[in-house]
Length: 68
Image (cartoon, rainbow, N blue to C red; front, side, top):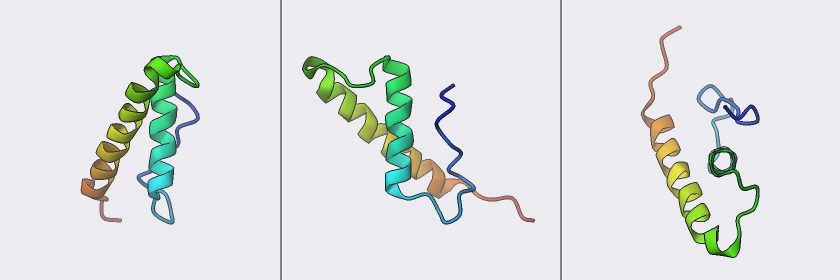
């Protein structure tokens, strides 16, 4: 997997939208093989980053921490 994507769940302070978006961008870059997509692929690339950002934010909001 992409080694530059860090764990966001246990981040203190809590992961920001920018942190989540940066992780989503790294994921899409890794999966697509594009660091910067062509104009023909730009819209699909950016839509994927937005969707993954939203899904990741929902996941982090819904995860429960184990009691210590």
